[in-house]
Length: 335
Ligand code: 5GP
Ligand code: MN
Image 1 (cartoon, rainbow, N blue to C red):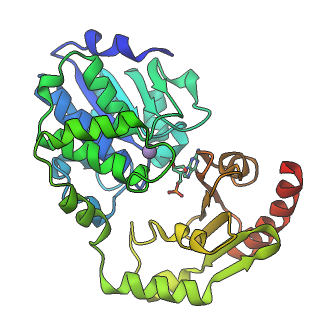
Image 2 (image 1 turned 90 degrees about the horizontal axis):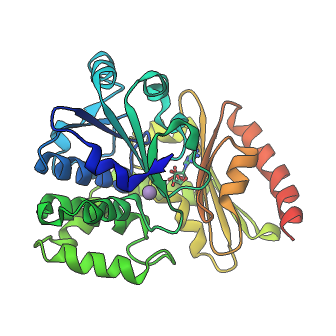
Image 3 (image 1 turned 60 degrees about the horizontal axis):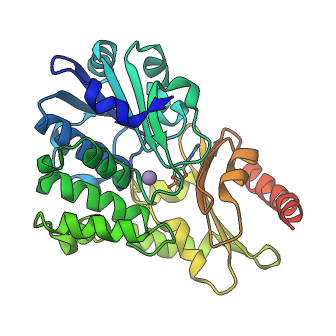
């Protein structure tokens, strides 16, 4: 993987650029992609954003959202765009499998592939250029760095600043996590200079749900949360009947995994959701539980030290049993 700084000077005006991100994009994946999209467009390049799947309603306010192509619902159009691309920017994921049904067409594409990401253990062999830096708060911050290094900071506008702000805000837990470095605050001070409304952005992302979602959270915290005090761990396992009953849609379960961490003594929280074709895991920890290794080792996933995800085709019950078994094993390995 060649240096990211070689990319901007190599882009030619006639070339077509695709930007993509991980499936079920969160504010960082979508924010970084849209920020890069507006920047490259402002710089005169022919650029398009493709999301591997649909996205949550709380992203719909983002500038440029109406131009994003959803791979799942517009597959033939998206395949053509990818086939004809000269460059593909891959944002906020470390492994092509994170793009789900888009993986094959990305791997087959002859375009030069650029990685910008902050997850552990990237699949470097499939990218031609890029940067992977786990010390970064967010991919949005890395897109900001990319823009500054390009020497074209004058192209930053309110759309770019708002998109970056949303991504950094979400990935730092609203500027709370250890990853919120002094340079994050310096960057935010710069972004504020573009007249962004940070309170409105916070509300658009976090106060934008329907009543059913809050009732669903009440239900699952009451009936589906198990506390494993001997392991300082909490597990929430949600059967399909719950998501159906409460009409849960993409994005409604975002943030749910964090609730048990507010219980004194709980150091790790796991969330298991029964989706149509797979069971989806989310892991979060405070301090010394390595969620990345845990997800990678037992649940076909990965991510960061304190936040990771995984998946399995086994049933909900088998996953719960497996989780309890491996938690014991993993805890003894970590001691
Ligand atoms: P979430 O629990 O929000 O889905 O994901 C938490 C973190 O882990 C995110 O940074 C996400 O990119 C990463 N992650 C989630 N699922 C997977 C997965 O299946 N594989 C890998 N490698 N990372 C994942
Ligand atoms: Mn991210």
